[in-house]
Each structure stands twice: as structure tokens, then as C-alpha cells.
Length: 261
Image (tube, rainbow, N blue to C red):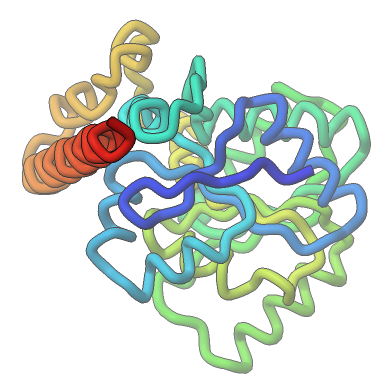
């Protein structure tokens, strides 16, 4: 069963935990049923808010997990969902790969550089010795031609993969899984960060920073030149939108209460 969604700034985010998200993905993978999944943190959410075309695509994705703590907080504050934890893409990837190894569900790797793919696959095999890798296709780092895309679809479907891990970076990977939903007979997971973490390209923030919603600060400290503008804009816009929607919710309740007096 696919978890229901609730809108955060017009973007549907799944009200889910790790177990429900993993089970929905594995169910689709076992059936070779086309299924799209993405893990959205604040950056991805704001990208979808600012780009109507991207928002429309993201809203077609079956499972959109609250990857960042602030996204979970927004769900809880705006919809009373009472989620106790986020559903972080790399951790969900680990759970899905563990289940796939146990159930002999083949996995296909799509995206990122050849070196990262090689290290990613090596780490998967180290952690899950029985995991089946159906294929590996590094990113072209450009749009595929129509013929190339058709060949990609045929190759993945022919591989027998039940799960396709997609690592193209946000929002390219979200566009890709949405565009290939109902074309590829597998569960498509847009989890680009997992590639770099598993491959050892990036350090993960300490658990206490992750729980406190401060992972962005850890990453900013590691890559200030590349990320300062992203986090300045996206975090500020997120807080403004959340304050706006909370005020609307509060005023709506106030007016409803006055109407019943």
C-alpha cells in the first residue's frame, strides 16, 4: 500500500516512516511494477515550489519521503501527522538494498560517474554479499537523445531489475523518475546522495546534527563556496512559506471559531 500524501507548499509529501516506505518499494519491485520514489529535503522541496513544471512532475511521483527534518516538521505542524522521524534517502536505500538482497531482487544502478558507481557497487556488495546487480549505467551528464532513452528503457527492462537506484542529483533525478514512471517495469528510486555516501565521496553529518535538522550546516561547512547561496535562499524561503501557511491555518481556525459563536 502506497502511503498517502499531504501538501507542503503545494508539493505532495508522503506521510510515511521507514518501514512503510521500504515495504511499498519492495512490493512494487517484487511485482516488477513501475513505481517512482524520491526523497525530498528542503532544497528539493523549494526547487519544486519555484518551478511549476517540476512541481507537476514531483506530484506524479508515487512516494515522496520527507528526507529532511524541516520537511517532517512542516508536515507535523501543517497537517498534524505526528511523524516521529524523517525518511532519509541514504538510510532508506540501505533498508531497501538489505531487503532486496534477502529476497533476491536485482538492482540496477543508473547515474553518477563511473568511479562513483564502481565504489557504490563495491560497498553494496560488501554490506550485502547476496545482492544481485542487474546492471550499471553511469550518467551521460547531458540529456539523452530519444533513441538513447529508448535504448536505456529497453536495457533496464531486459536486465530483470526490480529496483533502479537513480543518482543524477536534484532535480534531474526527480525529472527522470517521473518521466520514466510507467515506462520502466521497476521501482525507481531518486536517491542521489546515497551514491556519494555509500561510495565514500561525502561525509555524513553526526547523528545529533541530523536529528536537529542541522545537516545543511554540516554540508555548508564542508562546501561553503558551492552551497552558501543555495542554503541562504532555500532555507529563508522555506521559513517564510512555513510561517505564511501556519498563519493561514491559525486565522482559518480563528474565523471558524468566530463563525460558530
